[in-house]
Image (cartoon, rainbow, N blue to C red; front, side, top):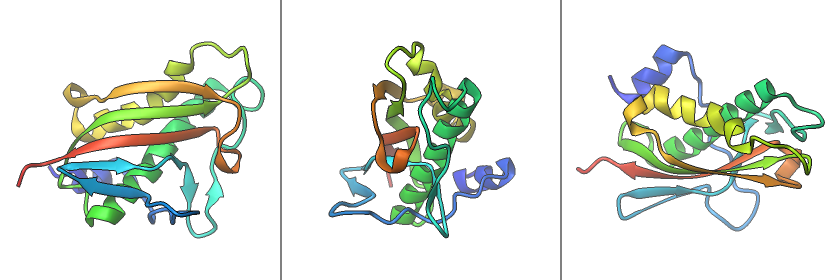
Length: 156
């Protein structure tokens, strides 16, 4: 089953790629890798931030799971926008997650499980990426999660 078919099976609509809000590309392919800019969970057509707020104040751990999953959906939309399809993606190599938190929030890495669980569902549990999770004071648009990723492309 292809990645695009798997998305349909899971009922996931990636939506449109997020247009850059400055002088940068949302995703770039080079040397068999795709690098993404920091991407938050947004949905077209109004590009409203999904799950805005700060963990430990406004959002629960369940919200964190959904926020990181939604940010990964937005990330995959940008990768698909660059490549035309996700079928050429072999796997995710690295996910860096920034999470808007209160100062004393513990367990920040577990807040990123929504993003990497989605990748496991798409690419297989044996291909989970490496991951870094960092607490941040503020993120673009008041988003609760921002992701930056590296994906490997299939050899042609």
